[in-house]
Image (cartoon, rainbow, N blue to C red; front, side, top):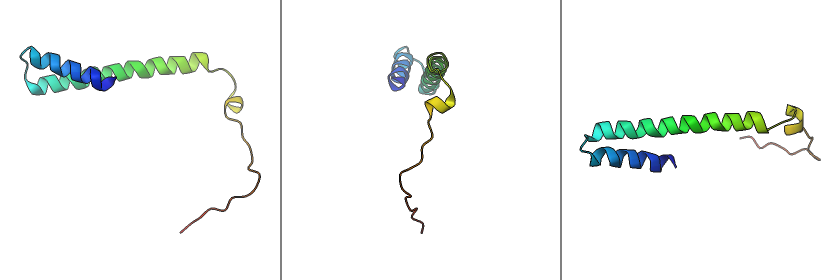
Length: 72
């Protein structure tokens, strides 16, 4: 999704006659802005829709038998 947004922004800027450096910078700006919005939306969804205590969401359990760790 972000690659498509970047590509469209760069293509539009170059089609309007802009220089490549400005087009690439605008493309990265658009992609990072969109990813920032997506992270804010994800944090709101995580905060609002994930209910319960931490212990309920990540239960602790003991393995049935000991598993040896291989070290070199």
